[in-house]
Amino acid sequence: MNLLVGALSMGFLLSLLTLGVFITYRVMGRLDLTTDGSFGLGAAVAGALLAHGVHPILATVAAAAAGWLAGATTGLIYVVLGVDTLLAGILVTTALYTVQLYIMGGGNLSLGALQTLPDAAER
Image 1 (spheres, helix red, strand yellow):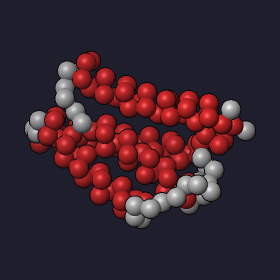
Image 2: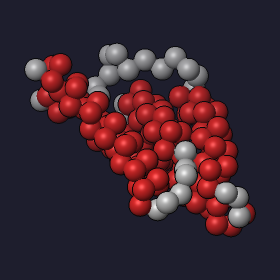
Image 3: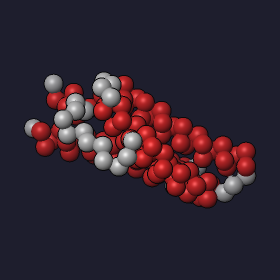
Image 4: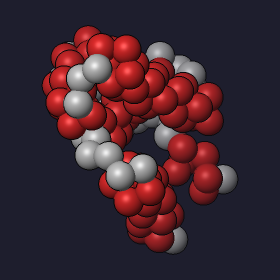
């Protein structure tokens, strides 16, 4: 049962990444790589909040909001500064790697002993 919940959780998360890539490539006709960086940013935000004792559902909502802000940043660079969408996505994704390390306080944040969203779903 534990393996099934983990597989479904991972599949759901990766389906959101796939949906973001599909929308930018096929529907909008733009080449945007922000989804790569925003996916990691959401994980960093959720992990940092979980480490500080925030409820897993609230941490997930905050992680989604952080991903939205990353996409909005790319959109603003594209619209306001007139930078190509591919270059704007690469710039934001590159900057997000540093932001992720800052949010987590380093690269070694452990979630092994904390309650995560799949743990809450098992109950």
